[in-house]
Image (tube, rainbow, N blue to C red; front, top):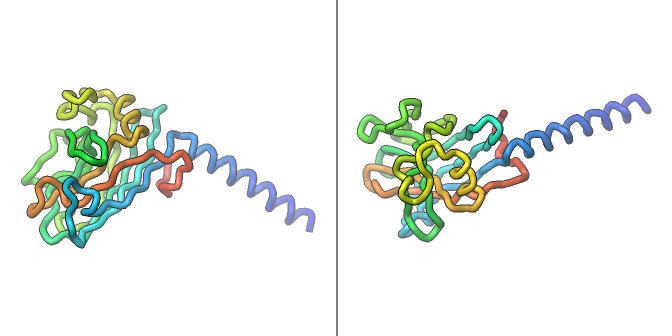
Length: 182
């Protein structure tokens, strides 16, 4: 009985330390995308989820974007720099298509009818279009600062709604509940 209790306590400590280590790696993001967050708001059956893990030490953001229910094909998805009441410049691409290719060669292709894309955002993937707003090419730390301030949003664009059909403001979470692996 004492051995069982000791094993349970040891396992709890190990799992607790592991959870703190994951949360301490920079925090997680998990947001639901809807048309109601678009500017102006859009009524659409389209929906999605954006999850990410920020790793400042390695200067990377690992992400997963899942979406579906759009009436027309998805053409591109990005993270933009702006508050929730306005539209802003593209900071980085999340997925693209032959019709709307990304300037970033490593950008995954958007599944036109819906699905999941995963990728890694590195300093070289940041900037260009957002430079006029103060996040220039390669300014990874400034991009992370904007995410933590709640001043970025993920946006999925479709044929019917080229300005964006579903959107979610990104807000950094310090509790690491994004369920993404390291």
